[in-house]
Image (cartoon, rainbow, N blue to C red; front, side, top):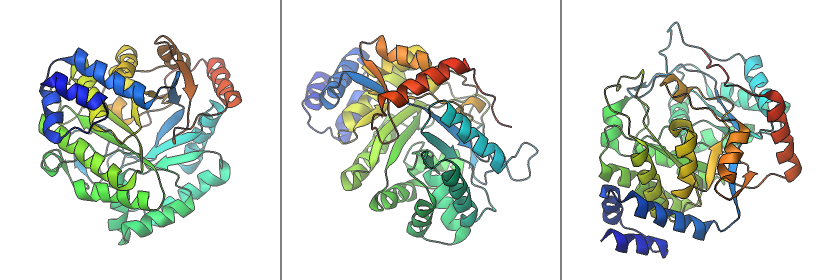
Length: 376
């Protein structure tokens, strides 16, 4: 039965939720991986595989939501709560540019006091200093939170932020797009339909975004498929997702530390099934940040066509005890060892020019870059 479903997906026929669940229930990782790779080769016959250079700037860890899975957030007034000074934030952007980056990923907690003009000024400051940098910012939970603080509809919020300089939206805060799961692991945070509606509205405004899934906690396998199905349905409607990224829940230092971390077998299987199921999403990203170099590399044979980001800085996963780090040469070598040409791309999956790519390679080698400290 599994072989028939894999043949169906490889042939380009759409899997049903029941068929996707059957694949997730299977332990035939090798066959599922081969099928996912076959789909990737059909969708991406190019001789190259891609990566990105960006930096995850967490402008604040102050958050009114309570997420049992999060080791990063701090309550308002907490001694470890922070808001990055504007000068420091702009310095981080400058360092990213110096290393060949063309994008920043900017996310924070759900701050209770900042009105929309604060975020417009933040975007404006970055755009004035670095007009060449795409701001991939503000996850759907943040954007939905802005509607509550400012008492504005989501379309107005997004229109104003886009005018101020917001370039694209990351898929953060999706966890599992099933209300039962969300209700169990978080309080005070956007639910499934509103998360999707933020993305729908952004796509309607001509914007692009990514979609994500954090799995391996309290969800069932059927709920993983429900998550994939909600993403696929919205992609059918708008076509606005550029890529899908999934990773395993990292439990250390969280309120859910008693939950065993899902291993590489489960990660590779889930990513491969995601490739088979999401027939309308062009790109799948490896998650070496949570899996390490070798599994991150192997993910390129299990449905991924992109090695993900250099991640000049990452704080959220690091707070949960996961500290994998790769240099640019290691990322490029991971791709080359599989017989592909490593190529740098932007957030819209367009290749950067060869001159710009070579600049980044040389800049990173000169820096002899080491992991940057987590902000406090």
